[in-house]
Image (cartoon, rainbow, N blue to C red; front, side, top):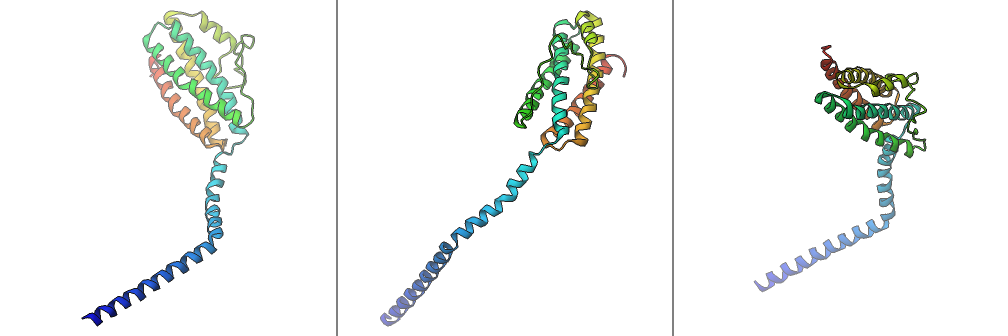
Length: 213
């Protein structure tokens, strides 16, 4: 029994020594190729970095969309603020609050894009400009239109506001569809898609409020 136990012990030690040798050899091999392994890791990460860079690409259509939609949204917000003060219908006031709540953050988002691209953010429309940019962008109200809205009140204001905002939204949808077709910057085309969805729904709502559907 003693001899047998001695044999087992010697066999176990031999196996242990063999395993240790294999482990050391493997470690030696890994350390020798460590630089290559790190290089492989860096190489593997480069496609992700490239994809990220491509996701940030933008073109002239993205720049034009952002600049023009900022101005377009600003006028919609101005109209919404007038409605908050002058509308007689609570439904109109609620819609105006919804419009302002949606478009104010989008103005900030698009301004951030332009800044990151090294582009100028459009200046606020001054009183001298009179909001008279209707010829440049679809759906924009002229200075005369805005003057009429500012002077209206009560039910007359409600009808005028809804009629103008339907036209304004239709212009925004047209601009957004152009961005979806021509733009390359993912976040911008996504925002354009959101504009189409939200404002199309609001156009339907406003037409219903006007008794047109």
